[in-house]
Length: 315
Image 1 (tube, rainbow, N blue to C red):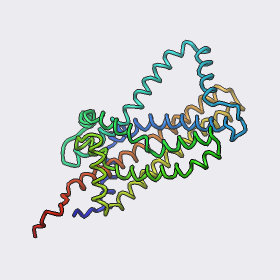
Image 2 (image 1 turned 135 degrees about the horizontal axis):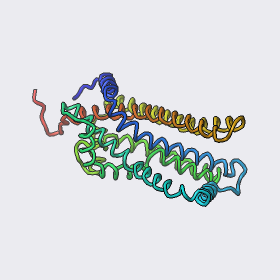
Image 3 (image 1 turned 90 degrees about the vertical axis):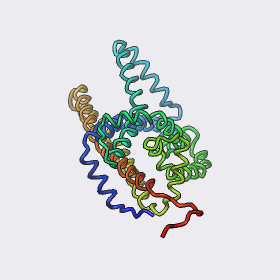
Image 4 (image 1 turned 180 degrees about the vertical axis):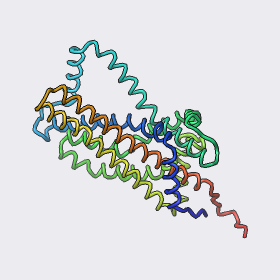
């Protein structure tokens, strides 16, 4: 049985993260810019949607209709901007759906190879990460259905559109789904690593992960720490996602009342970009640190041979 030094794993992972700035920039910071930007847009839409709902007295309002109307009016008013903006949005969308998964696969490859004494650069990580990209992307599409964030989306939809009575009726179902989601996330902790490092298929990796979690139940303390780390990351990101649009709106609104509106927009945009980059870099560091801790743990646990009941112990 492996005796794992949890403190050493955490310390070594942090030292590795701090000594690999390129890894943080390419596979942490850049993907985080994409996901944080989309998160800001989604939160802004949710705030607007709740403001237009019956909760704030506007029962006739429709956030989606207002958004579509705004986009349509913008197209009519700024025809020359339409094509460039569409091209930019398409490129951004492609990168958002593909690059974070590729960056995760490349990170795991690079970290695992360097842990095993191999020379691995950003290019090496990308090269081998691409080979497992499709399987990892498929796995993320499957597991996203059970994610806590997806459940929050469903809960907010019920509150806004079906009312508090229906939400109360469905609350036990949502709580049960949250518990199931947590259990599944825990069981599939190592699925990414079986896919990327061992080259297993999606469902084989999910089964192998569940088996490894059960067999390594004594290492629950480490898993708990890692879950807390992920929770801290999500909390930090949520705070920044709420803070950035609030800062932009507050600064822009204040300056617009005392000076020219264009000045307020310019300063608000600059402050928003600075906050976005800071939040993305912080999230990128935490992401790479988490990847490293999980990878080191995975390599240690999978190096252990579990004896069957038929095998004798050689004394």
